[in-house]
Picture 1 (cartoon, rainbow, N blue to C red):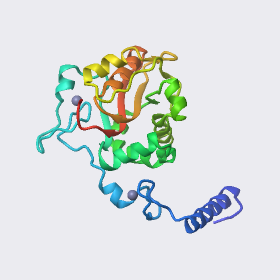
Picture 2 (cartoon, protein in one colour; picture 1 turned 90 degrees about the vertical axis):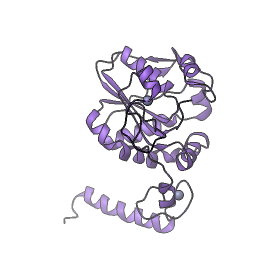
Picture 3 (cartoon, rainbow, N blue to C red; picture 1 turned 60 degrees about the horizontal axis):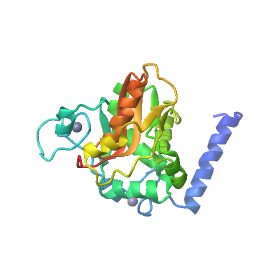
Length: 251
Ligand SMILES: [Zn+2]
Ligand SMILES: [Zn+2]
């Protein structure tokens, strides 16, 4: 190996610096502060308490069914009113670890969770995202006043990190939330959808792009539906949805 290249020298130096930093500041699990194995993103006890959504699940919106056997099929909501998106995929259920992760990431200002959480999403999405091959990643936007309160959009951070690792561009200012919407917690699916009607708009038309919409949690799917509808009306070719966590109930 020749050390003449500044790039190789820098790579060696970088590895040394990482090793030194790990020695002085041993890596810890960002969720529970336990010591981490080198290069692990979370500790094994946190990873073990993530519950992946397994079959039988809704093939459209990723909702898990109560029955333990059987094949994937459409849930009642998707049968009665098919969503405008092709499919949705999550890392796992919105309980235990993922609930704690979202709490820290979204409400407690722990924005450094973006990279490890996006890495989990990348792994969970591997098959579907390869088949879908998106042209663009779009985060579900926050209304401007909410963004000021929180100072960052957690969906944008996830999309950026996912986009970097998949080498897909992220369009941060394309899908906009043009009016504030009351909190959705405690509302049924129909009320949620009514709440969100006309809440989103595009800053420019699309031209048949395949869009992967990114968000942290999907509950009834009302937000994903409304965003997807806005994107398709605005010229998107197809829309699919990637979320960190899937809430068990349809609301
Ligand atoms: Zn942990
Ligand atoms: Zn469904």
